[in-house]
Image (cartoon, rainbow, N blue to C red):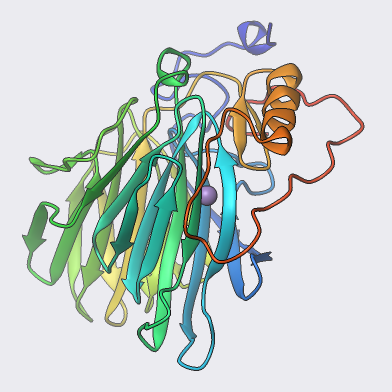
Length: 319
Ligand code: MN
């Protein structure tokens, strides 16, 4: 049950997201990830939980890790989502309970679909580049696909789009006729855009999608709003093109998708539809069942945090 039906919804976006183009600049909060990496968490954010099916956005670096271990995220479980590892600098070694062992490098797609259960670890390899800079993104799986078997995909080569002063890599979905090989389960797009100082572009976008732009480097005006690292500009939907102007050389991730209408419960590394599902997943992980085993990680696996004492209410993408 939800109260959505009580609201008049006759817009391109539908539901309770914005009803057209908006410009909502969100700042991240700093969160420790594992032992030695700090990230800026842009989604979920106050009043804004999702952009299409994109439901989690962490931006980290650039960090100088020449004399440090870098990223060290011990084995932990996932349910009901896909993880996207995306790097601009450095490398991340991915291990999972399917037996995958894969180094993901800059502008390669590491895409893990948890389905009903998977566990993985992510670490900077012992021999690593000086700089680490990237984003960790999650995509919520729709009900019809969230119980599937887990998979891991590595796509080292992705389609590219170019225009004057602009270079784009299509991470997921499609832009201007270029389609990523990564598997998706709802209509969405993720594009990495690099712009040359002074360039201006009108990027073709899908009016039925809502969008957000995550600044990676430099200073770029997105629909007239200056976006810089540490912030995410939520754009709503209803545009046919998106104006970009590079104040400096810079890069951003453009994330978009059809508004995700299902209500979800997101807790720790799990996405479900009820408190009961989350409680069961936590207990399965703690008992060592269902989520498999990650082999080869030098360290203990993560323990789940304590469950909140209040029931977890399924929530929509905003508010
Ligand atoms: Mn993870």
